[in-house]
Image (cartoon, rainbow, N blue to C red):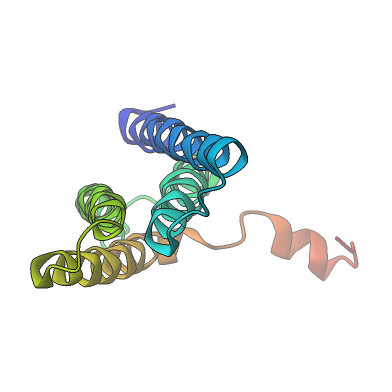
Length: 151
């Protein structure tokens, strides 16, 4: 397992810890004080778990499991995957922090931060799958399918 795969997976675990902590806080507050969670805190919790953990884990495992690019393939550029990691990490952190902060403020800057974080998440995932597109290919399975094997 190479460095970037480990980085995606470990970052996902950090986002999971953040999401679980925030979710635990929301649960305790709701059940013990009757305070219903603010929609922006729910959104921060959701983005920490679903984008921060689930998508980072999917990206890390996909990067690890997909076939290596063929020798001489100039279409696959690892630097794109690296860029997607940083875009997605910064955007997800920004989204979580700005959503959580929006629960107590309607400041225009925070609204823009939420939007920039969300657009950054879209861009980061777009760059990731653009980078991996050529690695989504059959490796031997087309031969077995041609012989009639069903999957």
